[in-house]
Length: 81
Image (tube, rainbow, N blue to C red):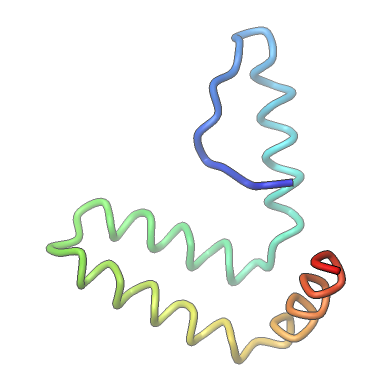
């Protein structure tokens, strides 16, 4: 299932869609979610594309050294087969 932040939903389906998105987010690492939220907040006023890319590069570099990284890579590899 692909995760997307943009989803058009009928008003009566909003709660179900919100809960589905929340469940997908719970499957992500806490640090990954925190850094993503930080990047979204900071990049909304980033002075340049280069600055936004530098922040993303920093976040990727930080996440490579977490215990969850290897498990995530292995899980992705299994799904790709």
